[in-house]
Image (cartoon, rainbow, N blue to C red; front, side, top):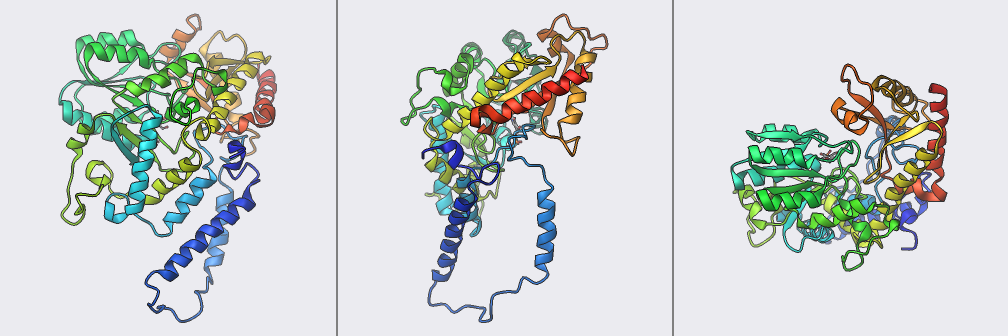
Length: 493
Ligand SMILES: Cc1ncc(COP(=O)(O)O)c(C=O)c1O
């Protein structure tokens, strides 16, 4: 592929639309031929002409109108949430198998797509540096995390679960559902990374069955100190699970075609710290890693991988009406979810076959996003009226209006003015960004002298550059975004 950043997507203006139509037609023709040629000597049930769509056309027109009022997630002007434009290969791969609709819970429900799922999982294991282990796709990160904790709980039976206070909201729910008696949020430092001293204090009070590290956290993309956590694991013996639902695919940016780690280069779009933590995940015990976030795939494709196959045992399940072929891989025998679309495995398979999980394929595209985040940081730094909150460990940027902020009230006031203009709140917004509201304790650590008499939550602005398009044309849209926000901030100040 000459230009994976361009060729792999429909393009913000549908630039690759003709190519897409050609490929989709090929897939549809192939499917129709397959139907015709299955039991070829059977007669058709319908001798008459094809069905008349009749009133369906009207409903379809109404539906398409609704469709076009949705937010333009594909456009570089949208950087609010983690919505990735799926690659062309994802759409084609999904459609191809969606038309026959296999179900990957059991081998008999989807023999081909089950094998695809296992191959895709193997690709992910290799990308994460796991030489052994197993895993599978899930409908999303929350389900993947739930399953991992369930497996660990029923293997270890005792101990607390620790995760940082900026972890995904689902962790508290997961611990509640699984009735974990001791779970605790660990404080973060001023960079939204887990405070390992606070963790160790807690480990000394109550041993942990599992510690969850973020790579990266949902709000700011911050990466916990995984090297430090591995050292603590040596001492305290907990299961280290990495919630890499968002950032795990960033590991592909520095892998060569043999999955070997390339020496550090700024071309990856990562700081040396982030590069080192991404290398270190190879020594974790399990990982949640979502293809539907950085991995170019449409929703719902999460995934969980485990280093120790024994963690399958507590999940093991049989059913008298399926899972008969015990010599065949029945993924549902060892997973929390039941029915799952085989089409999703097919979408991943087609995408990663063409765009392998290394620097020559998917990694090249993701490094475009990571570099966009770094460029945005640099532009904000140089701007007259904006400031960075954190250096982006991944491709999520946090920033605020003003150069010197004296009080949380001012920080919040200016952030809200910008947010109301450049977010889903404004139907005519020229750029769509989001915000990150954090506890007073975090802002105090980052800016010890900031005034916050009532200990209010602090709001900073947030952009997620999950689409690599911010990099294209010498960062055209990234520059435009900063110029626009800077201009607006100068009026608000
Ligand atoms: C770090 C992290 N973990 C877990 C999740 C949950 O993933 P999902 O929404 O796919 O269930 C998210 C979602 O944003 C996330 O950012």
